[in-house]
Length: 268
Image (cartoon, one colour):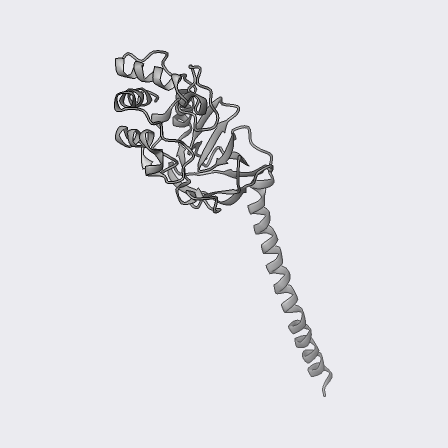
């Protein structure tokens, strides 16, 4: 066999042996670069524009606290949106007060569990304003299916206004006589032992903070729209709307019930 032909054969064999290795190396380099690009926002230091929130899963609702902003709410997580110039991620500290829950808002982030006696961390960073629906993604008891939550993503100016409004305390004495009577009912019954209303002696921590109850879209963690009629039905018999709920029926007559609801709808 001529020497030149032999050389060409060996060259082709060498190329066939090397090409797969080069392809694998190129693919690996691409995967490494892509992984680094995805991981960078996760591993990078928390930017000064970030918002910090503590989310506590409870049967069957979400306690939401903004420690540095002095805001406490329930079932609705308000966050500022990021844009092309400024990142405004919201870092979540996830805890559970009872059983295992799972924070899941599909259009914003993947699932992260809330586990008793353990703290998990995640972050969300919407770029488009809007309301993103989610729910508990880990079976946690009777009303697991109605442990819903909302992320309300807002432009930074609107988010700042929401924070300022949420920092306000409740009015000391409603002008409406029925609401004023309802305030006395609220503070004089077990309501004040389970719920907090800033600006009053009510400082309960077992149930949701009610200081700005009517600023939220739903009651019972999404089981019903937050209207006067549905709120009245909820206070009269919570189990009728959300079977197994831990809030007891108030067992008060219609006059006191109407007064109590008249007060609750002033909490905006």
